[in-house]
Image (cartoon, rainbow, N blue to C red; front, side):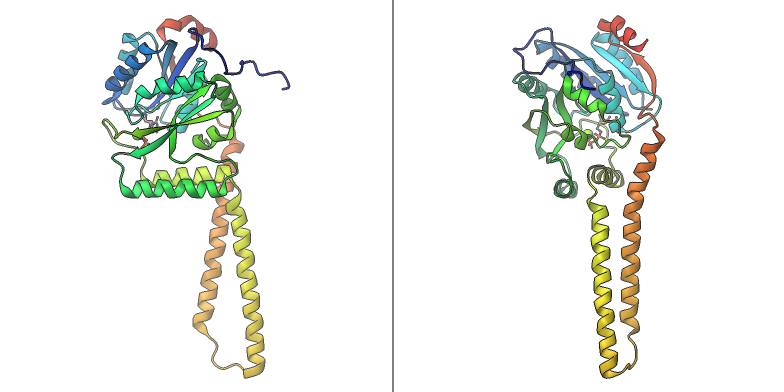
Length: 336
Ligand code: UDP
Ligand code: MG
């Protein structure tokens, strides 16, 4: 455990031998993949680094697999990891990071909302010695006012209650140095709220601004229900504040009920007891019932996550690995 970290610090003059991995989670993106890869290819060709592109096929059922196979035939840098079913973006990202072999790894969406051209600036920031280069969205083109407002409110809430600052308006689009990737891979939790995990590992970080484009084709899989689920994941995996909130709310209502009771006793002694207040009783009962259900629900959220962790299931299952053709032997060695 105390052995020094194997990977050297990222501060270095910049070796042409450095290798960049680009991890791309793919779920039913056959419509945009060819355009995406063409743009990515141009960027990678211009970089003074060797590179690999790790596509993680997250159980696509729209022919993305065939498109990826074609891309791999056309470009020796392309590796394709196929998961056994749809595990969700966070698991797909983890699979990609586990298989990426580069000295730095860029995580990018396939839908062209994250412009691949920015990788040049990200690599530059990495060469300056930053381990994590996050991309902050300056503008969110093509997203409804409601989505923008809810995302903004969520990040602010999360930051108020969580112990590590989680940057506002940053998605998963980012660059990680090798030691940041290794650190991330040590985090064993099943419930992977990636934005939070990225922030938790620390290391020198740098934030770049960019304007997020609209999806080039296809549609976002994030319904409001899924976003709410993600928000719950984010909050419950990074803070105990809601549990504490339940304690405070319970204490407060108990105290209020006590003083109310005391007041009723005094009132009865002084004025006798005319018709008792049915409405006020209903109000108190309903309020307490609601508060109790809320507190139980909050506990259930944490219990459910504890349950998921205790099962120790793998985060994803790999169906097949097609290594990059220019590194076949090395990747096969790793698998064996
Ligand atoms: N994605 C995935 N598995 C999923 C859902 C999405 O790998 O279950 C991928 C998707 O192909 C895309 C990226 O994650 O490359 C972002 O997805 P999306 O555009 O739907 O999310 P948004 O941009 O709205 O956050
Ligand atoms: Mg998208």
